[in-house]
Image (cartoon, rainbow, N blue to C red; front, side, top):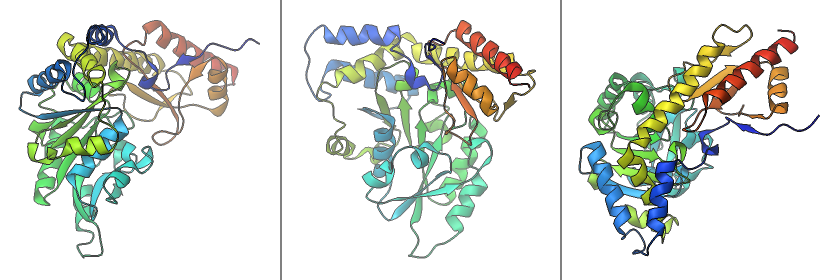
Length: 350
């Protein structure tokens, strides 16, 4: 049997560059400009973020999410502090110790929570578990929006977390790898879903939203951004041709594609969930609230899907099969996956 062509739904990292980002990338390439972020594209993109978030925030551009999260957390705490995060958080499971490395040893304190979310009570329990000098003092709460299992923190949940953070003098970091998808799903403005709900620092991903690479680290409390540019330089994140990271962001922001792309990706995940909701043998593991969908599927069905070219992960979240939709995921691709899942279940005897 001929090998099937791969059909990519393992991650939104597999998609290409969206047209709006490509257009401004080519515009930035049409003429020379200053290096190390002193170019007009980086200034324009930074100003657009300030307009988008409706506040005078500090904006920095780095290559990827690991650098964004690790450097942001390092700027928020000392080596003898700790960061409270969900046990499934990307900073805990998928960043190769980057947050600990760049903070010179700040410890991650894992807490549980249903559907990938930590709770105010979980935070309070972790903070008050110990208070002696032998324990790394909790200093930061890290939230993932959308979570690693595709769920969302509502505005009320964020505000409740801010309340407990204030009680214990904690700062709040948000890993916004899919922040655009959360804005689209909750129909909230970026300001509402970040600083107005108590977030101090946001790592806003472009890679998962139509860029080739590039994340924005946004400090709503400017005091926390002191010397952050030096952290970026030391970590190898100060791009000499910074405009090729920042200009595509300008394409996303000026056109509104950042939100359109997220809405489309979310809609494709919902389409798949709707198409499988009455199929015997398919179990949704978590609510489908953004652009990710987790299914429990028999191993024989998984094998059949792989043989038919479908890509997916089984090690993210709490097991099962993960499909992630992107800005360019088509309805036809989603319907083909639904049909293949149904056919694979039938052939496996389910």
